[in-house]
Amino acid sequence: MIEVFYKNTKQRTTETLESISPQKDEILNIRLIDFTSEELQGIANKFDLHVGYFHQKEDIEISSHYVDLHDQVSITISVPSYTSDTSVEEKDMYIIIKDSIFFTFMPVGIEEKINLLTKYRYDIDQIDFKTYQELFAFQIGVITDYFADIVESVSAKIKKIFSNTLKSSQFTQKDLDTLTEINFSNYLILESMSEFQRILMMLRRKFATETKVVKKLSAEIRDLRVISEHINNNFERINDLKLNVGSKIELEQNNIFKILTIITVCISIPTLIAGIYGMNFKNMPELSTSYGYPLAWLAILLGFILPLLYFKRKKWF
Image 1: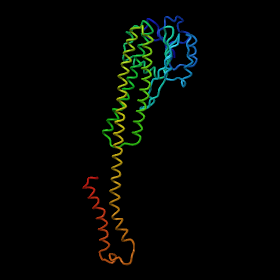
Image 2: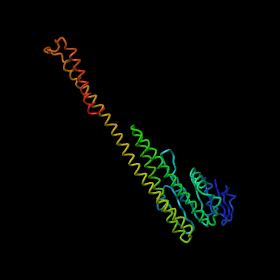
Image 3: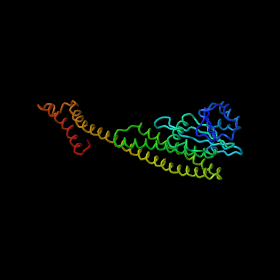
Image 4: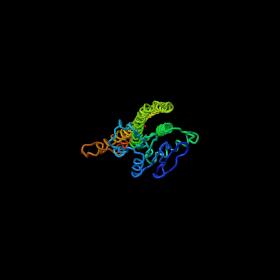
């Protein structure tokens, strides 16, 4: 799908490649969502864009996520997105700036979240964008908000687990695996955001003569630093949770070992008595005693009950 944002308008229009205005100075932004290779190549041909790096994703190093050529700026932003309740994957968003137009190539799913953020946090109908730089800086701000939201989502998940940890004493390896998965997701978010912050610093130098844009980008960089602190706090809370859950699992294992110790000791004395009188030697005076059998049972019961009373007094159970 192709969306176009024209000058002196407040809404994006959905268009085909053929219907896009040939007057480049009328366009501020062209957005391709879940685009096909034909749409990509068609836009590239119509506006003379260099899109070869789209097909070299695996070869792009972090240092190549911002490329400033003589006639085009190419940006690759890794955007974290949830694939499950605790798992995050990175999706690549591409931005090209050329001839006073910026082109956005968005993966499926991300544009929906970006649109919702724009709708609920900004009165977009009242904002009048005079230049592509102003619209571009605004979109960058929405991406920063997206990072803030996903970090807040991770924090909420950690808080929920914290609450459950305080209420529960039963934990399994699956609980530790969940924490590890959240920790890895938090790491991916931090890595993506650090990349994004570095790109903003380069863009700030690029638009050094645009005062409003520089001011906006500087504000977003400060916001990202605050978000980074929240991410680091999430790491600390996850580590605290792992220690807490690990301690409770260890305590539960100790209780199991205590129970096994109690059972072993309580059974060992009766087993010893039964073993002695089961040896069938001829000269065993107790075998000919009238009350030998009930006395043996009494010894066996005492051998079981007395250790129980001892462990009970020691508060092992």
